[in-house]
Length: 263
View 1 (cartoon, helix red, strand yellow):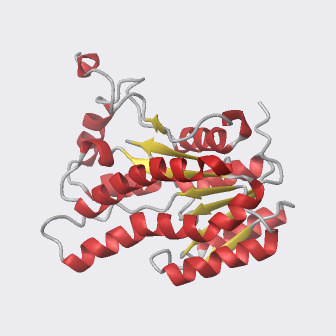
View 2 (cartoon, rainbow, N blue to C red):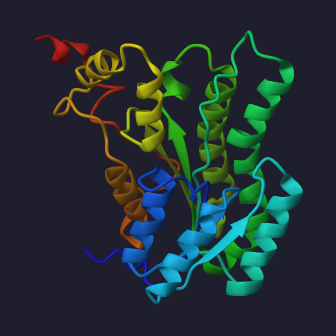
View 3 (cartoon, rainbow, N blue to C red):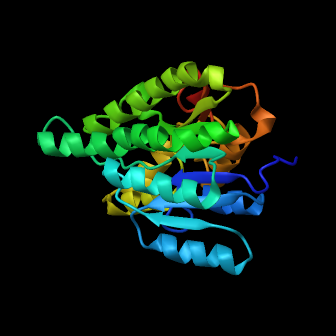
């Protein structure tokens, strides 16, 4: 199916993670569809990704900023707007499950909110004039933690709950502009960061298997590519009458009856 994303300017935050991370996978998938990926991230890997794409003849841009800094976010939006004149889609992808819990400092909690929630608001606010020009759309990357809790990660849970609230709020705010706003909810996805976390555990393999057994569909983790594919569909005009929705890509992990898990 042609998603009609050719030459669409798509901004993806937090997309300079290691190869195989969700953001990086989204960027590569956009490039494969002929879109113009714009990476907004603090990691210098973004320069390499930009070069790789340009070497393939793909128009791409990396803007290095600290997404915890609204002033830098405003600057990034201006850079993108001046270069392309419009933004067809904004994917607020940045997120770190940083473990800022009840035993953490107030500073750590506020830092978590700044990255995982406030950056979504600032990016959307400053990119909005350029999104309006193309009657584009906004996609927020959420987490099952907003719905289920996880423990010991108050900052991340509060942020992701806020992201879902903002998704519906902005869908209402922007409906008269014809701008769609949706969220993707992710549960257990086999990313490089997840692999790193498993490797830190003394009983990592045992823990991994216990998680996989709890995923109803095929007893496996969601791949970053499956998430990227859903993201691309959601921002495309193939999803032109979908707004204010939480699209869960998790193999039934959050919502299906636990009786499915009996052996």
